[in-house]
Length: 149
Length: 182
Image (cartoon, rainbow over all chains, first blue to last red; front, top):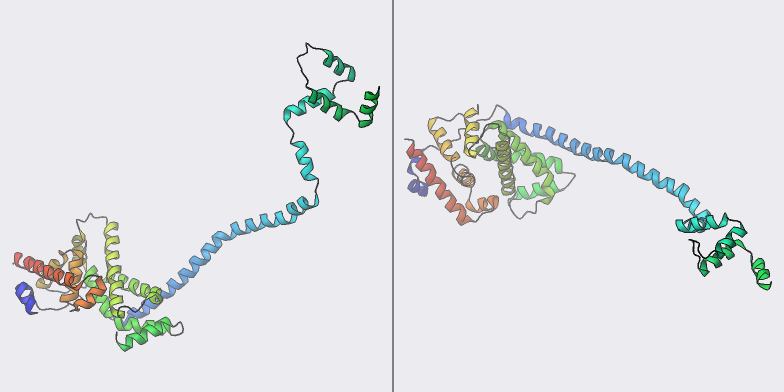
C-alpha cells in the first residue's frame, strides 16, 4: 500500500470498492442454472455420439452387404469351378492370332496348298506357323500316315 | 493447498462422489471466479456466460488436474483463459469496427445496467481499460483481489519479477490517466 502511495498517489486516494452489482439472488441460483446446463451438455455429447453412429450406419450396412454377397456367391463359385482359370487363359490370346487362325481354318485344303505354292503371295508363312497349323488341324495318326507316304 | 481442497479434489476424481463434490466446488468458488471474470469482460451477462463455461471446462477436465498447483489458482487460470477467449471472439463478431479491446470493453461497461459506480469509479475503470490486456489482469488481481505474486505467477504462468514490473507500470499508467482528466 505504501508502495502504491509512492508511485500512484491519486490512485491510492480512491476508496477501494466494487462498483459492479449482480441481479438479485444471482449467486443463489447460479449452481442450479449451471446444473441444468451441465445436463444439457451431457445429453448433447450423447446425442453427438449417436449422430455419428447414425451417419456411419448406412455405409457400414452397405459394406457388410457387399462382404456377404462376396462370401456367399463369388468365393464358392471361384473355389468350385477349377477350369475357370484355364478357359480364361485360352480366351486371352492375341487378337491378330485369332484373325489368322480363323482365316486359315475357313479355307479348303486345295486353296491352302495353292496359297503355300504361290511365291508371289502377299501372306508369308514361317515354318513355325505351318507346324502350328498342322498340329491344330491334323491328328498324330494323320501326320504319321502322311510322312510314311 | 488446504485440506478441504484436497478432499474436494479426491471426491471430484471419484465417480461416485463427483456430482456432490462439484456442487461444493461451485458453491465455494463461484463468487471469486465471477468477480475475477467480471473485471475482465465488464458486462454481467457476459460474465455469467463465461463463468458457466469456466465451470463446464472444470467439469470436463477435472481428471487432467495434476495437483501441481492449488485448486483455486487452477480455477483462476481457466477463468482467465475463458474470459480472454470470450473477448477476442466477441470482438471478431462485432458489427461495429473496434480499434482495440478497450473500445469494446468500454462499450460493455457503459451499457451495463449493473454498474453502479460513481464518477471517480467510472474514471478508474476507464483508466484500467486503457491498459494492455496482461497488465490489466495483473492490476485487477493485485489491486482489487490482493492476490500474492506467487499465486499470480501460477495463474498467469509468468515470473514474479515480471509480474511486479507489470503491476508497477500499470499503476503508473492509471495514475497518469487519473491526473490527465482532473
